[in-house]
Image: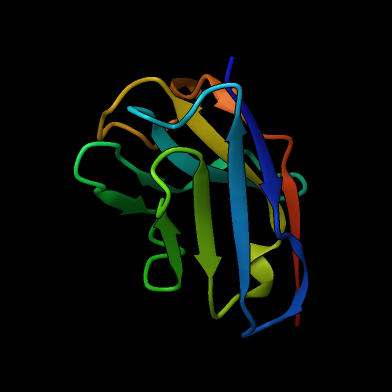
Length: 125
């Protein structure tokens, strides 16, 4: 059973940066599609970024494109989300997600079987 643990959240001023990490245990990330979602208070959970196992193609929500970078330098068990030029509207709980499927149809919540516990990111204005 794959378990995901996020780290790296916190409080930052607008314009600052944070890096979230997600570590796998129980299994490795080999052949998994991986991603990040977020949920702000009173809002639905939304797609942030995803990366495919094969070829490492990346996908981003329009709201974060050019500011956030998803990466998987250690293909086996660590996923990152580098967040630059943060805005107050980026404030949310961020979730690391994984699915035992390599697909580019990867922006929907129900696709993912595995979710981390969430990491709070707060951006002050």
